[in-house]
Length: 152
Figure 1 (cartoon, rainbow, N blue to C red):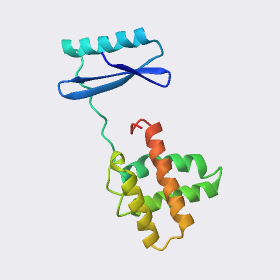
Figure 2: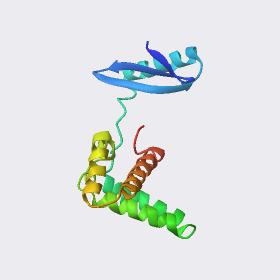
Figure 3: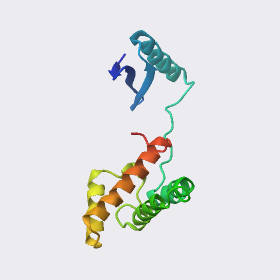
């Protein structure tokens, strides 16, 4: 039995057939959390549920085209056109990037973000424009988390 607390909420973690199972109980009571963990273990043992399949994570370019651009257009194109121009510039620079364009969203880490920033500087952009591109990337990744495409 391995429950632990993150903030006010209890989580559990255990190994099952060589895979780590780590989930939130969404409970603040330790005893209830322990019961939820036991129920999950027993359902795995009975074969009622398998290890949960992970969602397919899209490529950055596809995610920008299919999810971010329509969201930004519908939200900002008429209400605040300058914001739409900012998003358009940021999304276009992400789609043209040689470093990030063909990577899955969960593969993008700090090293690749730094490489992307240096790529933008090599392309002749000013520091403020590079920072704008990085803000756009950060917003795309946050939208992926909010949409359930990525885990934090």
